[in-house]
Amino acid sequence: MTPRLERVADCIDRINGAAGRAAAWCCLFIVLAEFAVVVLRYVFGFGSIALQESVLYAMAALVMLGGAWTLQTGGHVRIDIFYGPATPRTRAVVDLIGALVFLMPFAVVLALVSIPYAARSWTVFEQSREASGLPLTYLLKTLIPLFAVFIGLQGIAQAIRAALVLIGR
Image (cartoon, rainbow, N blue to C red; front, side):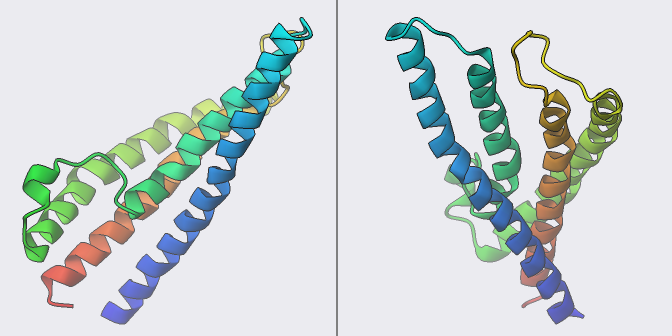
């Protein structure tokens, strides 16, 4: 049973790692697009709402798709003054409680709230309110339930790994 659970956690880690590494490319796009916005605005006197919105979309994708990967790699905010010197068993207890009591309920509530929100946007293929903005607002809103799924999956992987430590694996 435990090797199967370990494989499930590994599979979740691979999925979130792939999403996070793909989202990391948004950083390059954000820098290049924002540079283009500034040059176009201040050198050529030309503004592009679509280009400005693409920076916003890329930032949202970076945060939403990279959040679970950040949790997986330990890059999230934690009070290391207590967690750092703790034994592996104590860390496992903290991780298990954190995943089951805080992370999983948050992911479930976020998914339940955001799925209808994104679905309404898809039904009308919602577009930007700006006349020359991007016609992809429904994709932007879809990132919210995707974030909930990815962070929830990572919570499952975290709980599995913590439980394996607690049973002596």
